[in-house]
Length: 205
Image (cartoon, rainbow, N blue to C red; front, top):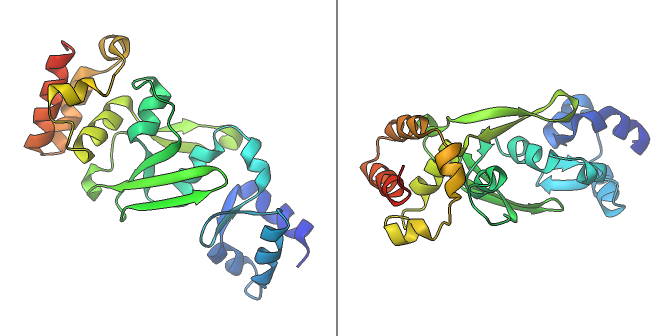
């Protein structure tokens, strides 16, 4: 297999897996992938899932790969809250929500963490456009905050909630409180409802 031909075929896909490759060429020699990885001509995202190193220099594709290499999933939790400026920390992980089992992958783009929720809680995300007509599933700020409070139950006191250091200007000016309450009800969790009420009281919302 000629690498140039392979690259021309697959580059515009951004990322792809071995099942797709074999559907394209059933007799494809997997040793090609090993050889191209060693030469730095390919990058492994996870077992059986690949991209080209050029995409390290393309904005937003690290987020796009988070959606693609573990489906269904959407960006949420600390990654989304940091993106919106709700929390002050720069997040080193790409954190996502999935209805699959909890998982974690490391690759040249970073560390990808996936937290599990029930299928009916896979809502509250938007499709953010990026280059080449692609889109990223990205939680709204309201859903990202609820996902965090739901999955991290130690945020159950005013002291712990204050230690999140949420941006008060964002909470008062940009957060949709009605949407937050509506989404909270869909979780059908009294524990989450209690945490949300504590948060609203702490920040005077």
